[in-house]
Length: 125
Image (cartoon, rainbow, N blue to C red; front, side):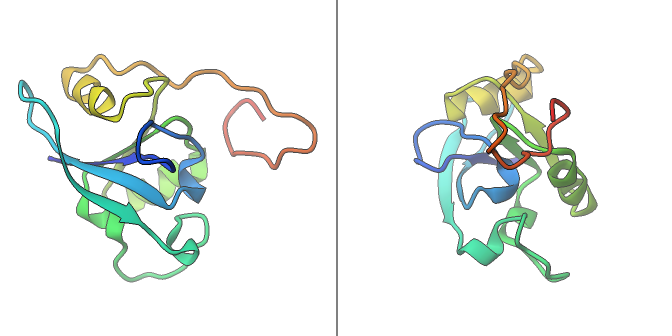
C-alpha cells in the first residue's frame, strides 16, 4: 500500500494537510518497515486547498494520507478521491505509517488557535 505523509520539511509529520505541498511517499506492508519511494513537492495550485480540478492529482496514487492535522474538508475531499486521510500526533513519518498499519497510530494532538490565525478546519475552531 502507498502512503503520503505531510512533511513540509521532509523530516517530520507536519499539519494543515489541505495546504501542505510536500509529502513523503512510502510503500508499506504490515510487518515490514515502510520504505520511502518518492517525494511530492507540489506547486501551490496543487495543494488540496487550492486544487479545483476534476482531473488527476498526485495524491490519487496513494491509499492513505497522514498529517499532524487535517480538517473535515480535506478528509471529505480525499475520501471523494478514494483516499483515507488521518491526523496523528506521531512526528516520525515512518513510525506514523507503521502505526497506521498496526492500528496503533496515535490520534491528532490538541492544538490552539489564536484570534489572528486562519481557521484550520478542525473541530476545535
